[in-house]
Length: 416
Image (tube, rainbow, N blue to C red; front, top):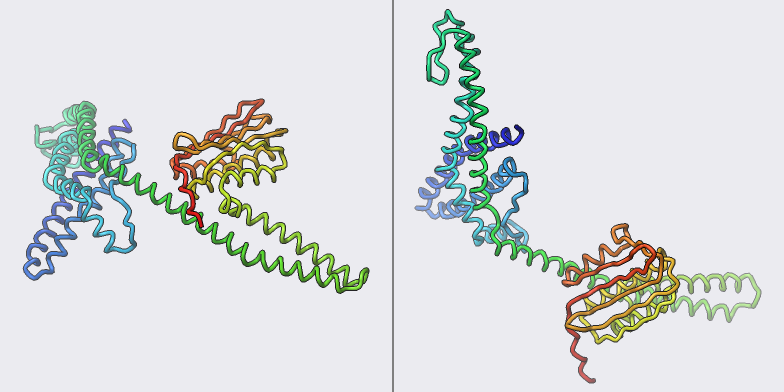
């Protein structure tokens, strides 16, 4: 019943929209052709070519009345902002011209079909079903009778009730043809308005490039912040700590001034240590200077859980090294916080045109990346590089994190 009502709404709305669309297209074409004599009509005709875009957007939404699955749009997002960039892209897309063809088809062919089907499957049965009301409005049996749907003469309430029952039966019987027509009509819309495989692949490639640009911009900003902190705030803190140390040497031992200078010196050293740890978390200098293998060794040395490392790696592209390093750091942090492990190991190799890295611990297991361990974001980051991240953690352990990123080694730096 619900599907029949949705199909009826689809057919009726198509019949209602078609006539205004025909008038709008005909008017736009006439104005464009008339004005083309004075050049102004050329932009009007160009805009008329885009008339199918809003029509198609509405039709994709209407098609969900028959089939709830969403119908994706085929258009790409302009790389440049502004209306001019949007217009240039739309005019060049094949989907725009398919949508215009659909709008013309709907205005000239489909809406008359919608109207005819609605009249036969809905209008006629409902007109027959309304025979008693029609007769009552005409003054009853003494008013001369009525002719429902212009078919036959009804002059009494028993005849009107029989006609109404016939109309209801006809309405039920025609529900299937109505649904079949609506399904076929929506299939035509989906065929013309759905994105083609090449368009889908182009949009997917565009999304992939966009994600890669975002990751690259994020990494560049991360390196800039690390560089500013390392070369700016850290150097000033080092100078401050040295100045406080020299001032302590000049102060009389045991004096209130010496005590205050010692406290300030210790606080400056603590702040400097925290800043260095923050810089290391943003983008460690060892990763940029010596590569992933050295950075993994450094992360293992700083882990509260003993970690054995076996990383024999060439220099790899910077995005690959950065993504792999932060995956190792996150994995070792999870080992220390959640696993209860006594020991962990990191194994990394570049084989078969890909970086393959594994982090294993002897903890209790049962790790679930979906519970906010930070690995979900890392998996998304690896996906930009066509990499994969998997976690195997049965109850009782061990937990094994494995990642694989396709990449080629960097060429050796030229000798100075």
